[in-house]
Length: 448
Image 1: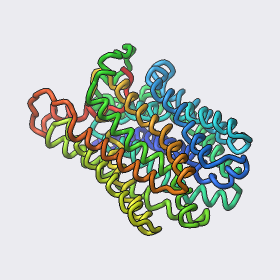
Image 2: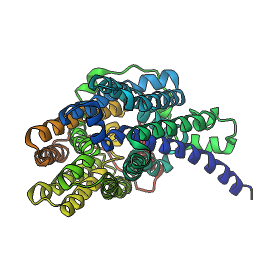
Image 3: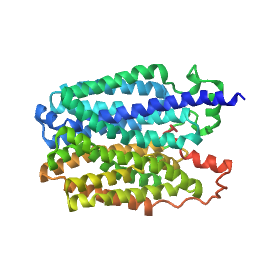
Image 4: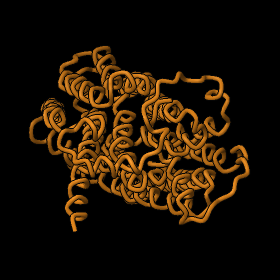
C-alpha cells in the first residue's frame, strides 16, 4: 500500500536533476551559437571579414576540444557538480565580455576561453545522468541530453536571439544570455548534486531504486588511460571519422546558416530567426527517432554493430539531402532540404557516445572523450573552411558540396569498415542478462 508514494518521491528528484542538465545544455548551445546571429553587426563593428569571422568561430572548438578530452580526469578529481558550476560561471563571463572584445584577436581569445569553459560541460552532464538515472530509464534521458537539448536549443535560440537583437541590440543579446547563465548557476548551486547519496532530500527508496539500476563499472574509478588500446581501436577511429563528418555539417550550419539566409535571400534578422526554426525542429524529431530506433534494434539483435549501421544510413541520408541545395537552389528548396539533412543527421545525436563505448568498453570515458574530440575537431575546421569558401567564391554552394562528400565518406566507413564482432550468444530479449548487456553500452561518458 505504501509503494505508490515511494515511487512518486524517487521520480521527482532524479527527473529534477535531469531537467537541470537539459536546461544547462540548452544554455550551453545557445551561448556558443549566439555569435552567428550577430555576424553582420559584429563584423562591421569590429572591422573583420567573413573569413576572419570563420576563424573566430573555429577558435571556440580549440578550447572545447582540449577540455572535452580532459573532462574525464577533471570530473574524477573535482566532481561533475563543481565542473558544471565553474564551467557555466566561466562561459557566462566570457559571453558578457564578447561584445566589448574590440578586435579580431580579442574575439579570438574570448572564443577559445568560451570553448574551454563549455568543453567539460557535456561529459560532466552525461556523468551526472549516469549517477542519477537507472539504466532502464536512461535511453530517453540520453536522447534528451544528447539530441533534443542540442537541437532544441537551436530551435528556440534562433527566434530568441533575433528578437533580442531587435529589442536590446546585438550587444544586449550577449548580456541577457550571460544573465541566464548566472541564473542557472544560482538555481543549480542549491539543487544539483553529484550523486543521490549527496542530496539530503532524496529518500532511501529512491537511492535504492537508482542504485539497483546501475552497473558496477559505472562507479567512480581512478584507473589511468591505456593509450595503446585507445589509439589502435579500429572501430573507434571509424566512429571518429563519422562523428567528424556529421560535426562538419552541424558546426557549419550552426555558425553559417543565419548568414547564408541573409546573404543569399536577403532576409531580415527577424525573418532569419523564423526560418531557422524548421531545421532544428527536424533535429529534435530526428534525435527522438534515433534514440527509440537504436534501443529497439539493439534489443532485438544484441549487436553493437547495429548502432553503426543506423548512424551510417542516417549520415548518408543527411548528406544526400543537401544535393538539391547546390543543384537547384531557392529559399524553399534550401530550407526544406537543410531541414531534412539536419533531421537525418540528428538521428545519430544520442548514439555516438554509446557506439564509442561499445568499441572500447574497458575504457568508456576515454572512448567517449576520443569521439567527442573528433566532433570538436570538426568544429575547428568547418567554420574556417566555410568562411574561406564564402570569401573566395562569394557563394555557399561549395561548402554544401564538402558537407555531402564528408557525409558519404563517414557513412561508408561506418557501413563497410567496422571490425567483425566477437561471436557471442544473444539471450532472449526479455531476460535480465539481455537487458543488462544492452544497457551497458548506454553508459554515458564515464572516466576509465
